[in-house]
Length: 382
Ligand SMILES: Nc1nc2c(ncn2[C@@H]2O[C@H](COP(=O)(O)OP(=O)(O)OP(=O)(O)O)[C@@H](O)[C@H]2O)c(=O)[nH]1
Image (cartoon, rainbow, N blue to C red; front, top):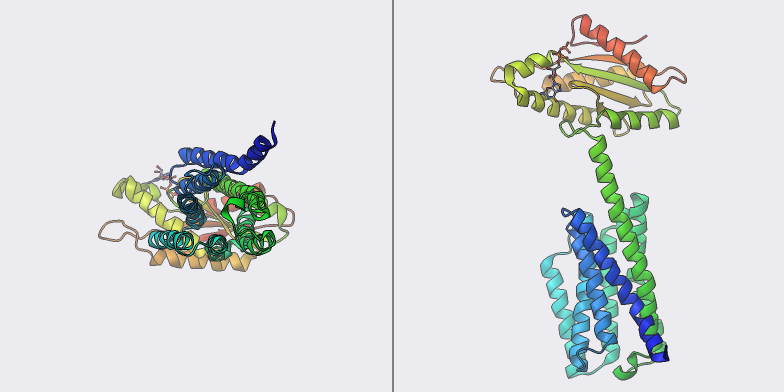
């Protein structure tokens, strides 16, 4: 292979890798169409890849047109990337802001080509501009620095990627001393740019892909573990989370089982959908009343379980009292007479080394007792 072909192949590695990432995001979007930001990542990779190709193959050959076209692709890529990462976190870059920046960069590049031809200014405008856009986006996502591992990885990779535009431009562009467009492709600046984009750009694309895959897996896990009607864990989710707490934390826990009274009669008199509405409201009450660390689940038709973490008998009693008050204060959609809704409770506080199944059984017997001795009351397991 001639030296020229080897050089070309090496130059094509970066845009080729990004084109593959573009296809990967597109494929991911075809599986998860509600995640529109995947299209933005795909567009960002494709636009960057096209920008590099336009420069490598000098198409169009007119230098001014080439500078403008490659700048458009690069700017679109940076804007799509910024908007994509922001949208993943339910924020957005803003269409008008993006269009304004695209227009501004095109005008500046055109000015420093056609009016005051200055390669140095064009390189600084592009690199500092891109660095700044990405830096601002990264800083808007600073909350991710305290989130899950993959979010932290995304935040820091984006931050490093945005910051590298500044020292790389200053160091290598000044060192290479290139002010001539014809020599630009041979310059140290252009080569370090290609290398850093290939390495850091691929790292960023890879971290984003990993974050997207993690999002999808978490969503699937949530769907598997959460009861859609009441918004609390289903039996599977409850067991898994409760088991984890009991196996990893050496604190006293209390199991509260809670069963709505005469629920069959609610369904019979007001209809199944009114019954559903009661379950939905009841789930909301439980989520409001429990602490973040507690585990709440719907473990049967109208039966709920709450594992109070780091709780003694008095904490469980206080919790149930607050719950009873919240139930009494809630207006359930049960006809004009506003039929009251009540629940019975069985409570068990963990003994030393007691496992989940034994704790659950004791709370269940206490609940059975509450039901059999008049309902609308709480009974403790001894
Ligand atoms: N609307 C609705 N009803 C449900 C759902 N799951 C179970 N049920 C109903 O809940 C009722 C439970 O009835 P029972 O087990 O007799 O309990 P109950 O009427 O509350 O009686 P006590 O618990 O003894 O006070 C049944 O009629 C089930 O059909 C659901 O998701 N939605």
